[in-house]
Length: 250
Ligand code: ADP
Image 1 (cartoon, rainbow, N blue to C red):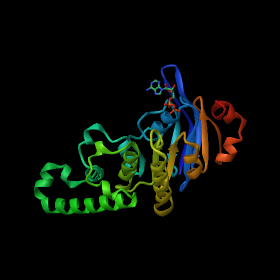
Image 2: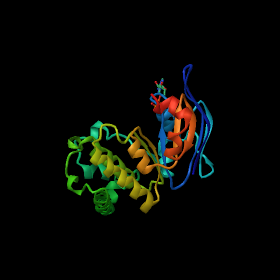
Image 3: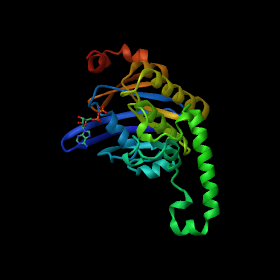
Image 4: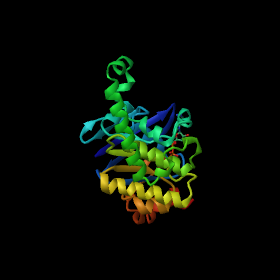
């Protein structure tokens, strides 16, 4: 689905990504692991259009998407999740979900004036969709809670929920497990698995928690020093000498 071909990203003289190539299979949950500073997040940001690569190419279903801005990729169903922005903290969980779609008629004011009936219908539809997402994620009880009051893990579920408000095909998740308690981490893992199996989402996940990776990811790709070191099942990766030396042994 996505082919990353010899991507380099330099910051001044520093090679954060130094010739990374990998393939993301449609329907997979691909795990990206490696030591801090390996270039995982930078590579994510290059694929998701937040950073332009110094050189190299990214294709999606055969189409060159290198350097396309995030909104263009969004239109193709490629999404990177983000922490809920500070200005959305005072909104409820449901409102945060209803904010997501980019083509709401209400965004254009003069349009809004002439098409009030349609906007009201769209709002009802958005609300229905948001409630369906909350049910899927088993957090219906949080619908009217302010986003600021959510725990770290609940915020991650909300971030995942935001991808469900649009027709996502491939979702990039950065460090889902950081600071999340185990019970909630497994709820998040279940939601990812169900989105993958039931809705056909492809996922690429950066994560340090090996239980989480083991439960979800095949294949697992290990990066170090801006390059891909190895790819395989988690067991294969764990047995790889280079991976042990660069990451697991430390
Ligand atoms: P990882 O996600 O694997 O921990 P990152 O992609 O965040 O690694 O970082 C790779 C390296 O690139 C790090 O040494 C980091 O300090 C550096 N880096 C990342 N972003 C920038 C930037 N905007 N400017 C300069 N250096 C950066």
